[in-house]
Length: 346
Image (cartoon, rainbow, N blue to C red):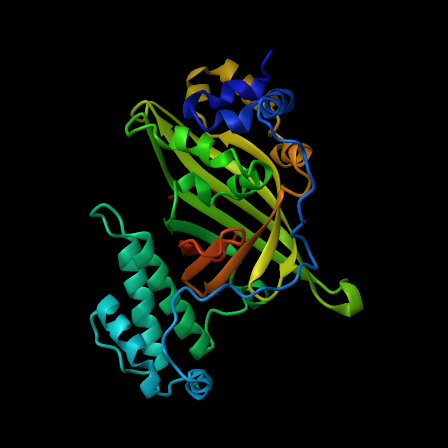
C-alpha cells in the first residue's frame, strides 16, 4: 500500500513519482534494472580540486597569457582582440574598454541571452557568454572563490537551465549518479510530456553557508544547507505543487565548489491537498519528507553526494555547474535577496 506521501504526488504527475514512492517501491523499481549496487567515488570534503576546463580558447602565447591577468581597470592586451570581438557581438558595444566595464557588459549580455523569449538561447551561445563573464571576472578579480567569498548565500532565481528546469535540483544530479545508465531514458519520458499537461518553473534556491574553525590544522570548515524549490503545474494549472529538496552542505571542494548531500524531497503547497480541506491537512501533516538521499545511497554508495561548482558569483549573478558534467552549459541564477528568503514569494 502506498504511503501517505504517495497522495502528494497527484498535482505533479510523471517525474514526481520518482520522488514520492516509498523506499520499498523505489528499491523494487531499481531491481527491475540490470544494475548491481556498486561503490562510486565519493565527492565529499577532501576531494582534489580540479579547475573546470576552459570552454573556449583564444590564440595567445605564454607571455600574453600572463599579461591577461591585468590589474583592475587596465586595458586589454593586443592578444585579447578576439575576446573584444566576441564581447562586441554579445553586448553590442565593441569592447575595448576597461576590464570592469567589459565585465558589466558581458554580464548584461548573458542575462539578456537567458531571458530571450523567442524560443530560448542555444546551449552553445550560453556556454560562450558564460565563459566571457568567467574570464573577465578572473581578470578583474571579481566573482571568484565562491566557496569562501560569502556571496553564495542568499535566495536565487533560475534564469537558464541547459536541460529541463527540474534538473537544476541537486536531487536529479544525485539520481544520475545512482542510475548512470538509466536516468536519461527515464528523464526523456517525463520531459516529453507537453505543455499544458506539464509546466515547470520558476525554480528557486536558498543557500545558507556557515564557517567554523574546527577543521584540520585549524582551517575553516564550510557547512550549511541548500533548499531547492521548483513549481510544477499539471492539467493546465489545475494542480500545482512545489517540489522541495533539502540538502546539507558538508564541505568545500577547492575555491569554487561546495559538496552537497541530498537529504529529503517533499511536494509542498499542493493545491490538490488544499481542495481536500481537513483531509488534505491530515495527509500533509502525517506525510514525512521522502528520504531521497538515503534511498539513493542504497542503490549506489556515494550517489547522494554531489558537487556544485560555481565559477562566478557576485552581488547579482551566479554561474554554477554540476561537477559531474563540467562541459555542459551552466545553470545561470539571478539573486533575489541576500537573506534566507521567504520561500516561494515570486
